[in-house]
Length: 308
Image: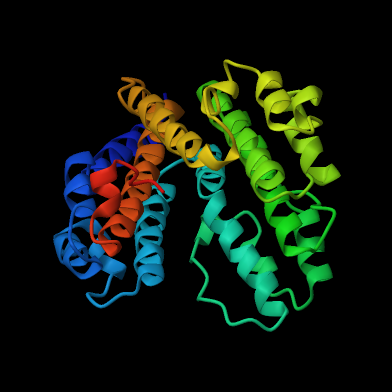
């Protein structure tokens, strides 16, 4: 036990008070409009970046900014190894920055990037890239690895598989999170969008899913080949790729349940900090889904499909 981990654990558990929580998220989801839902959020920790007239996209980004803020606060308390773990947890938001940078290089108008600070893997250098080749070189020199392409779709899929691989490696309890995330990524890309998995991405996924799954050409053989304990649970029983949203919902439920167990650990080490950080991300996910439901007049809440 070190003083740094004691302080980080205490801070992480205190940050859990900034969550909206399942009950409030359900009430948000049932609101008749996005405006009404945003009014409900005005007294929560997410208010820092929200405006009452935010568009759906702006509201989603505001929620993301809120959770990044909380994790950056936590990052100021954890030892260096803990910062590395937080970097992996916010990988999806850095992927958003990187994909937007690639689009911006191509001339598209993109939103302001998330300010990740010390939680960025390579964003500071990637933000300065002025060509797709330069961006790829930055990635290749970082923990992300070389995506093998600067095609936006292929690059994003590779980054998601790289993030899954990194997530699986940070703690024994997160291995199933990473493996299932890899399975969902490949399933979405290959069977929903009809795009093959690139060789660099396949190399990232193979240690998590096995060669048979990664090389499967159809849905049934893919799901049958997945290792059941670490990855197959996320897709088990789904009728086809059109139900992947259910697998993603199942993934978040599993992460939240596992994270709650980790957060209850009495030790002053990585486990409770990892659990608390994952719970903050799960809360942000629930709030994003609730806002999407409210934007549709609460219909998703009534159908029970808030995560879609």
